[in-house]
Image (cartoon, rainbow, N blue to C red; front, side):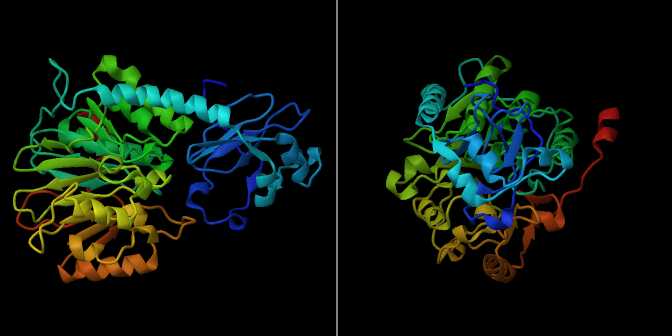
Length: 435
């Protein structure tokens, strides 16, 4: 198999989105190449957001979803396109239907085994490392004082990218989906504005879906986080392998890849009475309750503040029922009766119905909520019923529910008499760099 699994491609064949099922693992935003038998140039078919290409250039390419690899049989695709080969030259690409796609793939267990073995080797090294930084190593902190510790939820489209700025100078990024120059530039400008330098203390990957790690390799290479936390159960795709390899290759630059200790949750004191907690569902919940959905094999993060009025819950894409069970165990935050509530709730799974669970919103009592999603999207996020329920809960506490595609980047302060979810002021990046 080719080692280069992340080459960009153009599109010469199109799948009609309206004809596909609603399985959320098959959104149509990534490209996979396929080659006609006897053709001199490759043709391409759009199929899956979590796919990255690989395989034998002369025969087929691979499609990954839920850790399973499928090899395309290009001859079937060529015949099923329903158009003569020379029609590809007239600017009208062939339309591939869902039936034709199903008929043109076969399971490739050999590739799955090789990929899983390489990922397992990298994870075993990460699991063996101690929870604290190794002797002699120190975490990077901003040389400038951070007067306004805050949470910044970037408008990245259908994915997550959340920046945490703390009083002691540590800066953490939760998930790394910055698909365009604008969103990645906003991340850089926030770092320069706060610290005068483009660097992170740490990076937390909640789970290994494409909309959470798309820019992970670039973030590790450019922003040089000292510590990278990943879940113990990894979605076995080439994108996951590339990210883990990038983290290991960055060790000489001071980046350490770690998993959470299964016997305890990860925590960090960040000054001003603020603490950051991370818990891995694979360690806290029974394996049979998680199933094979990578959304459920995830890290859930929480931030506690001195008065417990501005606590933050970052739930990734975890299902509502599992999030309720985690909070019932006191992970990552301890909610004691009605005395504690959440200041900001990052709505799980982009405000989809999978996050709905009776009593969850009553338990966390969010004052503010934020949903990160793009528009339009084929999942109908944020779902109207979920949005209505969240609005009812936040309005009772004089808060609100913000959606990134409607308002842009959103900011939530961690300290102050009354924290309010507001639009982020975007300083001009080029102006800051000239200073």
